[in-house]
Length: 224
Image 1 (cartoon, rainbow, N blue to C red):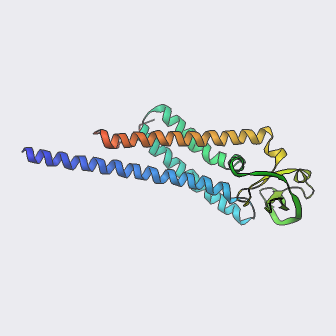
Image 2 (tube, rainbow, N blue to C red):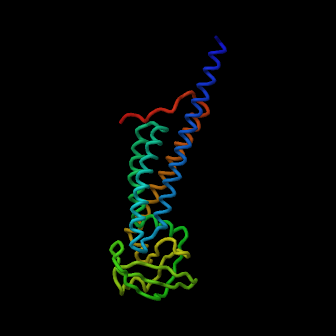
Image 3 (cartoon, helix red, strand yellow):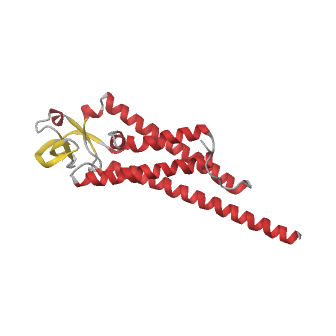
């Protein structure tokens, strides 16, 4: 009888660990998907009408994966405060990524500032996110960023420009990059991303602890 009980106990423990491992693996995958979609949105750029469809697709995947991330998170942390913060994150991250806050945050890390020469101003075949003109520029370091604008004679383009050397994110006139609205958007995006990473770390730490040191089973999310 004891042997049967021990075998059953051993089987239950293996099943419990396997369930937690599957839960944690799924959480890691969905977290990586959210982060990859954020990066994809930042580097996509609105450079042609076709990328409008791409950005809509990225937004849809980001929204669905953010919701899934929140659902996994509240299963792991199981408290109302974390659930509320998770709601704010999964709603805010897609929206903040689709403002200038995401690309501008990338420019903070990797951007350069210089007064670049306008090489050409081309009219777009059709407006892209309200912009009718593409400015092609050449910067002192050899970079050739492109900027979409609504005015063919935009005075902001004659001043300093904040740009990525490889043009991976949209360049911005310095005067707009440093204004209060753009600064606020950057702070919102960065605060949401920091909260996302902190809550992810907390959820993973909690999940690993329960997997290794408790007898608890992965449970369904708490009822609201």
